[in-house]
Image 1 (tube, one colour):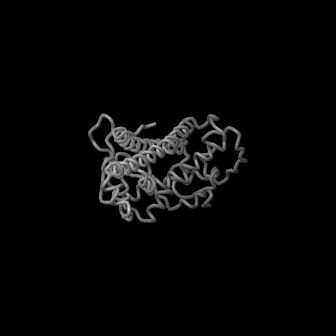
Image 2: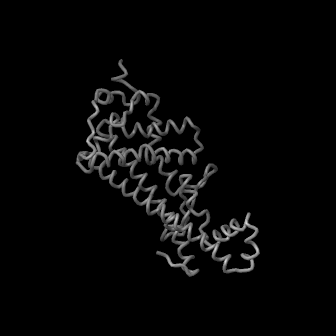
Image 3: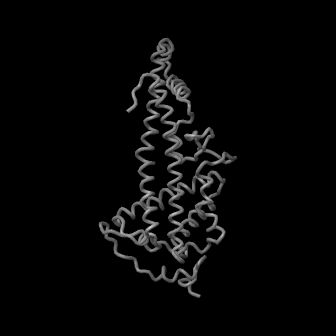
Length: 281
């Protein structure tokens, strides 16, 4: 049988995909989510997914991925994880972060300890400053408080300029996927948002989960393609659209968890700064 009519898992759904003619894109025209969530829109070839098995597809489901992203448990492969105590709870919630985010977050939730470390780092390699700083506690305190303030601003900036807008973008995509036939937004805006999910968020998510589970390079690749398969090739009764909704919700919830972490840590630092006479905008 021709590979155009039988390819991989769910083979009998590929004839329409193989025969589809890509539509001419009009960036300013309104489109619906279902027009974007197609293999031909992103030039995806079903032949590239012939090795994806039903077990892989099931393992790539959002609810299978969630436990390694939200309120995770520390394990032997745990790294780049930060914790915070949520409001109304005395228990610590742990969040795995992207590598660049782990550099932005304070490794400790104690601002005074962070300031002490910053002061020690400031003194190392700058011996000419050591006598004056040691003799004058006010200068030493200023070094520590300045470091706490700088770190707080970085955490606030990441939350407000990256995570919160990204959550809003994901909410818009969820709305579009839940109402796939409605003309919601411009083609360009939808394409950029979906491309951000495909090319940035999902690969980063797979890296986080792979780090938690100790995956090798092949397992990373299979996971990425299994997720892609769920989102583009499970088209019977529009199952792919349901998969989009559930996947986007996990991404949104993960971003919200990170936003909570950064807000919590920044709030603790802000309290410290007020106690030391700094004003918080």
